[in-house]
Length: 514
Ligand code: MSP
Image (tube, rainbow, N blue to C red; front, top):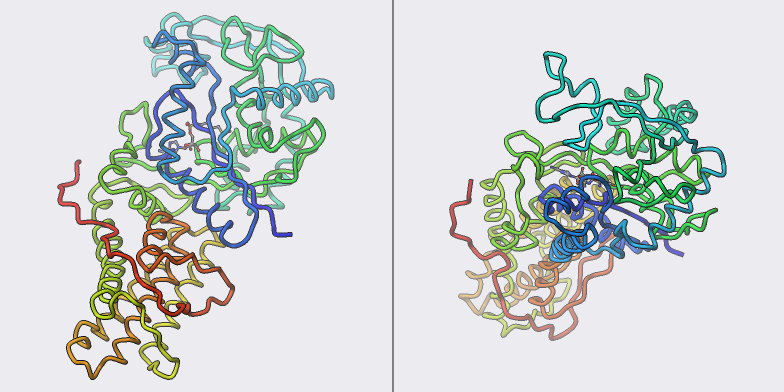
């Protein structure tokens, strides 16, 4: 039986449209899912949307719409974008779906029955204008709450608490014993820092009178579930939780941004699972932020980049390539449209696109479209060198993907593409074609070029699926090569006829927008 690989993204809030940061996370998870599928694992890839909570309720209200209708409309924007980006999810969860709500209620009931949830009082400052609880941090320099909050009142309400505090010691132990549970592992320190002081129990409900857009508590119809408690459960609701166990997809890998590590994913989530007697996720894979001018890209600050604009100009794979190549997982990256344009022109257009175009056109022009058959004895040191280097590039890609270093993996793969260009330049088939005496040598060079591209296309497909398909079509409708620990140089069957050479990344003559 092949191994099971379950991977999830964070589920996005639907109170605004998706931006480049959301799209990056889904593409990153997709690249890992495709890589593991290609390497023979059984993959289940879950993404989706977080639809409850005060923010969604308010956004719907502002537009005078029913919250569910509002969510349905927004959900279509997210799902369409992710489909367009070739994000190969196996399921798309929406927290308003009955299949999810049932599990949330099942879990609440179970924890309540087990004494892990108790009734208490929440007391704090509250701004009715902003419909928001305030803390000491919200006070201005003069000690008063700023004008935007309007009249601030002290509110006391009945709510339910989940016993978080009693598990604190266990969690600290877990983090100390498993420093690589969070990737990259430098973030473990951050979590341990947050756990230095005692953590309070978690308030997991809100009175229905104030917040109606949520899942009712099964044991108190006047209260709805706090949105984070509801949302985290998506990771196990969709794959199946019957009240005792989760389906054998669990545990999986949770891919998230750094802003939702503490406290949600590194404190609430493991403690919820512990209280349910379920295994913790295999790993929390935490990426950094896309910024613009060093500020976090977000819909509220208005500095977000719309992935659709980039896709419409440059194509889906250009977007996927850029975000994977530009960002080192775990660290922030500043978005620049000039850099996007540059990578498109040089790494995609000039390096990969031109290579494929040259190779396919020359087979068409010099050999009537048929990839020449060659014998091993015709190979020279130039071919041996090429083969070694391209195979090394493929291996290094895989080694880095296994270490979740996607940007390095891509850099290594591109070394292979650059090496094939170098081979073409050194052997100059366009010159060989001028003299029929070089016919055998030309056969070798054309065949080696096609074979090298064929080999690279397999791994390229994890990141650039559409481009890999186009390459295989242009090479004559080939199927992707199977993977192997020791990649072999590909062979073509007799009379493999190339397709039409079409530019993979056409030149785009625009001055990139600021
Ligand atoms: N709904 C919660 C997540 C619940 S998971 C059980 C949420 N939603 S969100 O829409 O605000 O963010 C969704 C994901 O997008 C998060 O992982 C977040 O870190 C990521 N990003 C949002 N803005 C981002 C950037 N500017 N850059 C990279 N990713 C960031 O949080």
